[in-house]
Image (cartoon, rainbow, N blue to C red; front, side, top):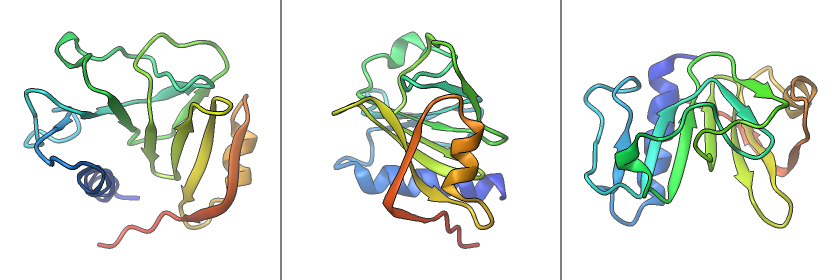
Length: 145
């Protein structure tokens, strides 16, 4: 899957989820010309690994710690870590094979929401050392050119 399309999906979803589209901040490494709000509500950062508790390896930069929502974009293969990571707590992940959301309630867990063509939720579940759930709302990760 082309990286630009994956990032565009994340940005489109982010803008649709915000009441104030100016409250978005995107890491420069993902998009050099991306939005960089002074007081973001939603932050999109690059990631490579996540744990069962919804955390990634890297903490947020100090000036972004007030952001209430953090999404991750993995431009390569997402790694699942069976340990406990100390980085930012993620709400959502976009990667070439899937889109996942983290449900904090009633039980903390990752939910597979979308999968790329040729990939099943079971494929992702088999790779993770912790439980990933999928339900009837699972849909294709469709990226239009």
